[in-house]
Image (cartoon, rainbow, N blue to C red; front, side):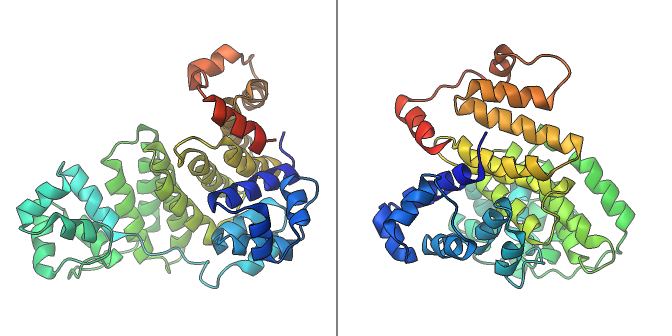
Length: 357
């Protein structure tokens, strides 16, 4: 089982390796002695919070990630101190993602849509990445070509991606909650059409975010969208959504907080060419220590079993799976049927042995 020192050591080695820096170069950047950094990376001791913050910033780690690391190291007071002033707000949903989801539902490629509108494919790409906004004429034609209903036009207006003259719909907390609950049940199927529903709901709720009871729904739908993105294996986007929810003041290890952390862990593991299971174990270990709700703990333990399994630590994976499902015996064969036999190259397996405790 990973200790705090070992998990932090793996993280520091990972960050330094990602920047292609030697141990001495990294120490010089942070104003540390190389021997001190060497002891941290070996898991021999833990740095003090100010020293750790200085090191992470020298490695260009973002403030949000620093906050998450400090929470995982039982330093929530320090984590709150480094939060930015605007972290109690969830950014406006991306209207470009809504346009992309509309195009996907219509089963059109970027080139096909551009041909129908008489514009360059690069123009459509810029709209979808929010590098540019369509003109009013293009908006009207987009809505017609993509057969967007009125509620989608309302959502696009809420995101600000297009200047649409629409009437703001009335706020109804019960209806929004019911709609989200029904959409959430469909997430495991990862249907491409579901994205439009989640994005549309996120946009509408964001419009009403100052109304009583609306902001918790906005946090909920943001976490649900992160889970959908994980199911679609769009891990970098999932990481952004999950981190936005946590940065908005979401209780880190409540029900939604654990779900957001599970998305972060999954993104950390699978967004690379080769999975990095030790990063997922790093995040899940903290969740396991703080989450007391049985259903949430079951999900955390199941994820830990998966990450241990793909790291080649089979007995540890069996132990985690058994704790997740205490009724009945879990065998190696059960995990092979679920996750398959690990197929790691010799060099990658060696890297795991070095990085993971």
